[in-house]
Length: 239
Image: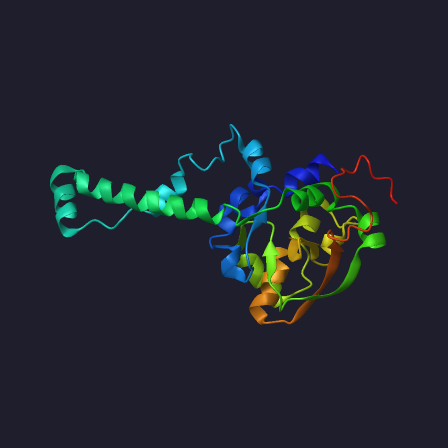
C-alpha cells in the first residue's frame, strides 16, 4: 500500500480539515446513524505526537466561533472604554473550553481496535485481496454499523442523497484506478461487529434514507480467509 493512501486515510487529510470553508457543517458519526467510532488509539497518539493537530492545541477558529454576545452592561463598558470588561472574557473562555472538550470527545474513539485498523491501513486498497477473499454483496444496514473515522460532512451526505453513484472524493483526487472503494463502500467484520472502512458518506446517506441495505465490498476479518491478520502487505504475495 502506498504512503499516499496511508496518509489520505488519516483524519488530518479529511476535507473539513484541509478545506473547512467547503464543509461548514460536520457531524460526529454517531449523529449520522453510525453505532460508534472505532480506531487505533495508540497509533493515532503516535501519529499526532508533536503535531499541530493535538487535542490540547489552541483552536483559533473555534475560539472565534464561541465568542458570546455582550450583555447590555458589557456593551456599555465597551462603548465607554473601548474594551469589554473581564466578565465578557471569562464567559468567552468558559464557552471555548466547553466547545473544545465537546470537539475532542467527538474525535476520541468509542472503541479501540488496533487489529482492524492495521488491516485497513495495510490492505484497504488491495484490490486483489478483496476480490479473491472478500464479497461484493448487499450489506445489511439494519444491524449496528460502526465507523472508522470520527466525522462526516453534511455537504457530502447531501451529495450522495441526491446521487448515490456520484464520483468519490478519492477518485477526484487520485483518479479512478482499480480501488474498489471508488465503486462501492467497503466494510470489515471484526469481533462480530460490522465496520465501514470506506464510503462513510455514502453509507450515512443510505442510513438517513432508511435503506435496509447498501451494495458494498465485505471482508470477514474474524474468519480471515487470506490469513492477513497481523501481517502487512510486504508479506502478502497475492494468495
